[in-house]
Length: 291
View 1 (spheres, rainbow, N blue to C red):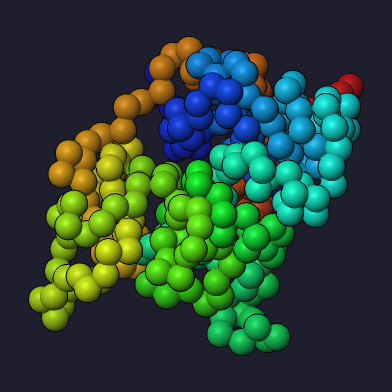
View 2: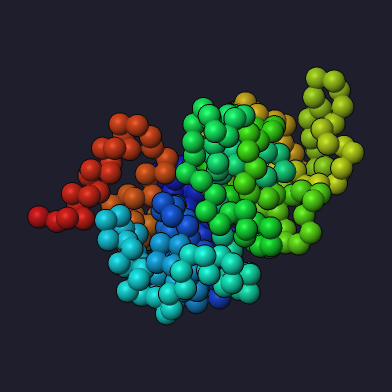
């Protein structure tokens, strides 16, 4: 059965979920929501959901939605805690798993959702902002990242601004990201001496003086060459000694995703931009409104 990169991403993200975990969903992240729902439908029926949308904790997750999603989450909440209390009080005690979508990410998993450009008050482009990212990434042990459109715009050797803490010598608690998936492949983070790495033009290894973990390719999507992934990344990444093609989604996973979890294709909004995204938004709104 044919599948799209966004479906491949959802399946890879779902496979990282373990039964009984507390998982967090932020705002405007339908790929994450689809992944959590797929995990719940398959191997992880006992998840707890902490949602920034409903600002509460749920055992029964809200289905993917667009125009009524806040009501769906609020109606299912076991308790409502508010955004600030959720980030500052609840999450530090539960140590949940959370996926973040960085606008920029460096080789060590530090990331930026603040702005593009070197001048904060006059940026080239203002980004959505950090929310609770600077708080929770300093103590969470289970941070995952996802990038719907892999490019040198996102994967940069140095961040314009620093909002999410990755594998950083300044870290005093928690762990940096342990998983990253894009529309091209799957990565983890490892020390340089555990993998092979290409040399740069000066014939020296990047970051050979430090043991800070670095992004490492562990699998590539069907039809994608490693050389293409490297060409779209603004720095050299590690390559696992057993790098391989990513296992495709099963027929049942695709059926669940397309027919039960997200029949409107809301997850596709994160992969589109411009006119195509606007057209899909109007289509989804019309379908949700009904006849």
